[in-house]
Length: 209
Ligand SMILES: *Cc1c(COP(=O)(O)O)cnc(C)c1O
Image (cartoon, rainbow, N blue to C red):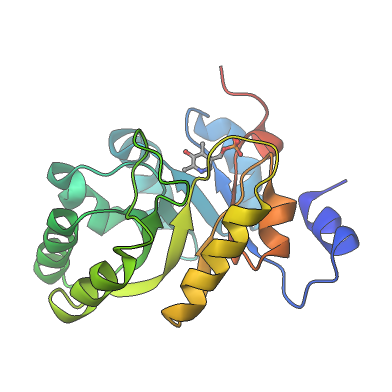
């Protein structure tokens, strides 16, 4: 069953989330049929790989939207702003400042998600839920970023419902419309908690080697 049909039949959703096809590690000859089919949203987690794979294809397909979903170093921002349309991994103020600086230079504004460390895991990136309000205010007031929503990668365990429901609450508190959550293993739960973007790799393209 397709992801879209599964979402439709499992839950009585008012609106279906956008599917970001996560193409990291997959060569473009595997991705191209999906582009030709008309799919819009694609995700990559490494800047250099994305530049190599997507620069030409994006020039020739103006309706494609590219999402940076991986950890982003400030020295790579200059490559991200021209190529990508969304950043899902804003997690520190230095990065916010750098994005603002590059956007001004290139006269382009990306749509940005703040990554929340929803499980408060020391090894994971993301802003703590307790610092989120202050962080959001700084992004808006000091840097004028277009913050559209929140993103998370929850701890790997069986039941994600608690994390997804907390994400939904945090988003509502800040009046943010978009929620980027849910991957191949948990997108149904994420959708049920109001995800507007789900990020799917292996369920579409198969296992990554
Ligand atoms: C790789 C990746 C995904 C997709 O993972 P799958 O389990 O293959 O669906 C989603 N989000 C992020 C941030 C990723 O790095």
